[in-house]
Image (cartoon, rainbow, N blue to C red; front, side):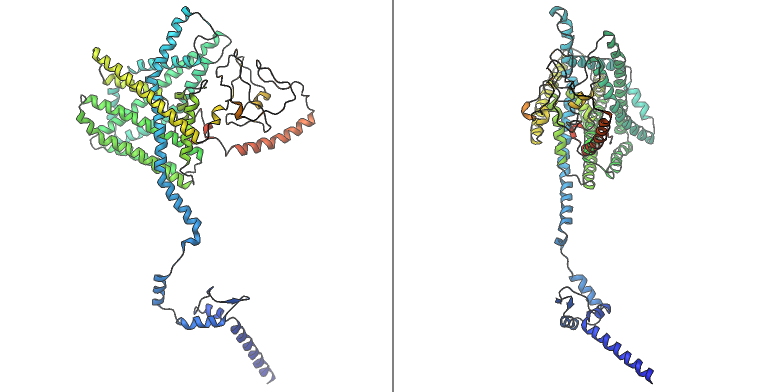
Length: 593
C-alpha cells in the first residue's frame, strides 16, 4: 500500500509540473500540433509571449486546416521585393548593360573599321607618292651632293621596301589562275568546303600573327645603325622572307574569296548557310569562358579586323560575279540578299557574343569607351613629330590587320576584272586615284579630330609626352643595369621602386633612329637631388663612379630585401596592366593570353 500511494503522489506531482509548464508557454504545444503558428506580431515581454493573444488568435482561426484556407492563402499571400533591393537592382543593371552593348560596341566597331580603312587606303594612295619621293631623292643625290650619314631616312627605307614587296608579289600573282582555282574548289563536296573554310580562317590568323613580326624584323634590319657595310647583307634574307610571306598570305585570302564565291553561286545555298552557322559556333567557344577587361580588348580588336576583312572579301566576290555577267546591274540585286545575310550574321554574332561576355564577367558597357580611347591614342601618337612607328604598322600590331596581302589581291582582282584600254580609260583610272586620295585625306582628318576628342575625354593627354624606352647604341652594347633602372619600362613604370630621373635625350650627332621629342617638364615632378655630378648632354647617363662596392654580407642582405620588393611590385602591376601596352607588337587574331 505504501508503494502504491508513493507512486500515486509522484504521478500527481509530475502532472502538476507539466500543467504549470503548459500554462507558462502554451504556444509550444500549439505549434507542435499545427493548430497555430508562431507570429512576430504577438507581444513579447522578457522572452515570453502574451498567452491571451495566443488564445485570441486561436479562437479566430478554425481548429482544422482545410483546402479552402490553403487556396485562399495561395491567392492572397504577398511578398516585398524591397527586402532584397540590392539583388534586384543588380539584375536590372545587367539588363541595362546588355541593352547598351549594341550601341557601345558598334561605336567601337565603326571607329575601328575606319581605322582599318585608313591604313588600307594608305597603301593605294600615299605609299606610291612616298616611294616616288624616295626614288627622286636617290636620283638627285649626286647632283645635290651627299650630306649626312644616310642616303634615305628610316621611314623612306621602309616605304621603298613596302613598294618593292607590293610590285614583286603583284607580278607573282599573275601566275596564279583565279578561274582554275574557282572551278577546282567548286568540284568539292559541301562538307569538304566547310572544313576547308574553317582551316583557312585558322591559317589566316596564324599568318597574320607571324607576318607582322617578319615585316618588323625586315624594317629594323634595314634601318638599324651599322658599323660595317657588310652588315647590310642581312637585309636580303629578311626581304625574301617578307616577299614569300605576303605572296602566300595573298594566295590564302584568294582561296577564301573563291570558297565564298562558290557558296554564293551554289543553287541550294546550303554551303552559305553552313558557313554562316559557323559564326554562331564562335559564340559557344567564347561566351562561357572567363574574360578580363584586357582579354575583351584583344577580342574586340580581332572582331574589328575580321569584319573589315569580310567586307573586302565580299567586294572581291561581287567584282568577280559582275565580271562574269558583263557588269549587268540587275545581277547586283541578285547578290544583295546573300551579302546582306553575311553582314547581318557578322553583326548579330558580335553583339550576342559581347553582350553575354560582359554579363557573365560583370564588365560594364563603359569599357568600350576605354578601348576606343586606346585606339585613338595610337593614332594621335603616330602623328607626333618623331613617332617611332608608322600608323599602318601600329594598326597591324594592335588588330592583326596587315594590309599588304589584301591590297595585292584586290589589285590583282581589279586588274583582271576591269580592262583598261585607251586614253579615256586611263583618264578614268587617274580620276579614281584622285578620288581615293581625297577619301583618304578626308578620312584621316575626321579620324584625327575624333581621336583628339576621345583622348582628351579619357584624360590621356599626359601619356603623349611620356618617352618610350630608348634603343641601345649603334655599337651593339647592352645597357648597363644602372641604365636599365633609369629608363622606364614600356608600361610607363620604373623597374625600381625608388624615384629616378627619365633618360636623357640622345645628342644630335648620335646615330639613334628612334629619337623622340623632349618631354614637357611641367608634366613630371622635379628629380631628386643626386650626390653624383650630373652627366653632360653629350653622353648617356652612367652610374655614379664614387659609389664604393658593398661588402658580401651587405649584398646578401640587399638581395634578400630586393626579392620581396620585386615580387610585390610584379603582383601589383599584373592586374593594373595598361590597355596601351596589351600585346602591342604581337597581338593578332583571337589569341587570348
